[in-house]
Length: 83
Image (cartoon, rainbow, N blue to C red):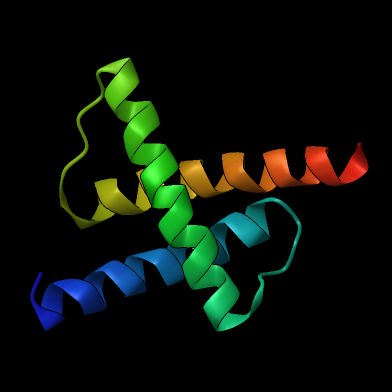
């Protein structure tokens, strides 16, 4: 992975984490927290879309998959915290 690819990956993670925080009424988790939530969400979203046979491509597709994965991650963490 080149440095440019790494930077794009981190920016997608930050944007996805921030958007998921807004959607889930969390208000975001700070830059590092948003990146972590977005990157893990990207892995979850990519895995889930692969299972469903949905192909995502490009920057917007990657952000959408990462946001959906991050929303799922936040929902699961909140469920575990309540238990």
